[in-house]
Amino acid sequence: MGSFTGPVRDRCQLSKSKEKPLIQCPQPIPQGVQCMDGPPPADSLEPLPEFTQKAYTRMIAYAKANGFRLIPVILPMQVEEIFCHNQGKYHPLGNYALRASKYFEDRGVSVMQLQDDLDQMCTPRHGIRDFFIPKDGHLTDIGNQWATQSIAKRLPAFMKGNR
Image (cartoon, rainbow, N blue to C red; front, side, top):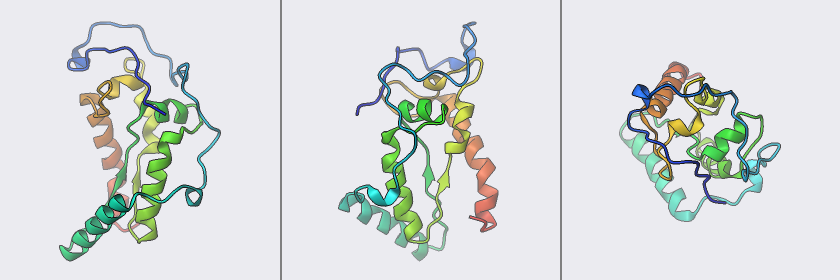
């Protein structure tokens, strides 16, 4: 299961882009992207690799030893996940996030999930692919703005201990 790559577009100057046709939201699922009706139970997935588990355990221990609260943030980084989610479906590329979330939650570490805001990755001027650098997975300027707003919206509940 590789990452879907659409047409390469200039991502550097998106906020200053020329007029382009309005985008219909939610965007249709591209041909070749296979969605499922829902996620599998987290318990049915293989555990995280041992190396990853050790790294996560060290992160948890470091946060406790240094007196700060660790808040892992789950941010889908594959466009397939987002196309599927915005149509009420699930893509198996999200399985890693399920496994990571379960690992932290099982150890008493609350995880911030940003999936509920994925529908905001489609606007009349910007489609899902405009939020990511093609073939890279990193966010563009508007992708970083989306992540910042999504985290800022959820952070107060975490700081009050409601999560």
